[in-house]
Length: 434
Image (cartoon, rainbow, N blue to C red; front, side):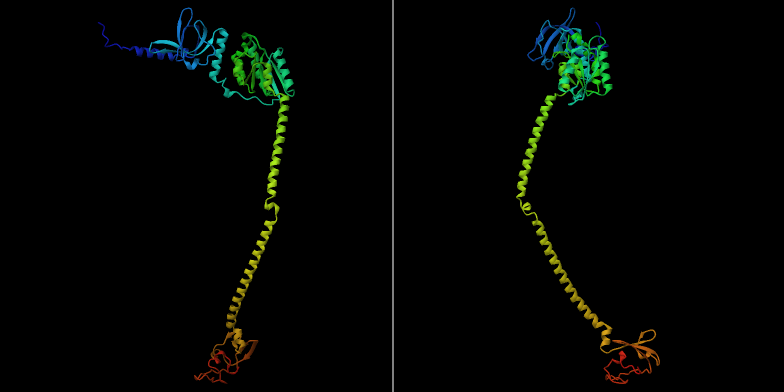
């Protein structure tokens, strides 16, 4: 009996998960297109679609969830040959590998259509078809560049439409092959030439309609990248209405025909004239309304008191100014009167203290010469000394003949040459010998 103690044993789930990891991590099985015939088709009540794709030798299980099939514009059924886009994964419950389908396209056009789908998906993943990168077209271009065959009907249609709608627009034509193996390189060169020229405001790249095989140049990756790299906004105009190319998806704007592209590129002068007339009328009407509104406001304002009596505020301010000046004058007069009274009082007090006032009452001041020292005692004076006597109205110059000291007996009588009130001799009135 075989011993399993030294062997690693896997569970069915572990094996299935390992295989699932290997399959789903393989980039070759992620984002692939598969061509096959639908069989065992079942559109489940949940909205999911279950079917198989088969060829002459093999069968591949497929599931397309409702979120991916809800916008299908046609019905799937057994026997239909399609191109299915998706990724290979493993359904763990049954251990089956299957294609998780995201898109389905009919395979009627064959390899050209498959190449179109693959390039579309590639450029879409790179963001070249992102609406956010598409630039607005100029409203009033002065020059339009055209990349197309110089001998085709498309160039004549473009020139005719632009000349009729906007005859002031300058048309610059960069001739290019639009069919054949050399067409993609020729279109790319023409786009780059107009970008280098730098004198155009918008580009029209296109041709007239034709079979799918005749439009292959505009499904070329080189042309798509040249359109995306253009510094000038590009209008793609390839084919007739129903035709759709990679160039249409990458361009800033798609036109169904070359004539439609010319109409998109330039404004119509008749429409512009009508628009200008309409705007002019609206402007005049708006101005008239504004004038009427302002006239009404002016009429209302003219009835206001400030406008009826515009000088009244000035008169009131003049009156207030006069009142203020009167009040100032009264205040000044009162202040002057008060100051005069104070000055008179001070002057009276000063006059009472003024030595000259004392002299006017009959007193005198004796001063020694030449130093003008005031004599306050007989001891300061000697016989023969020059002195001056200051009286109210002048100075008397004298010489001392005799000096006699006064003695007071307490009765108020001077012992000099006469009698006087006690203390008056001290003022020098009876200085002996003067």
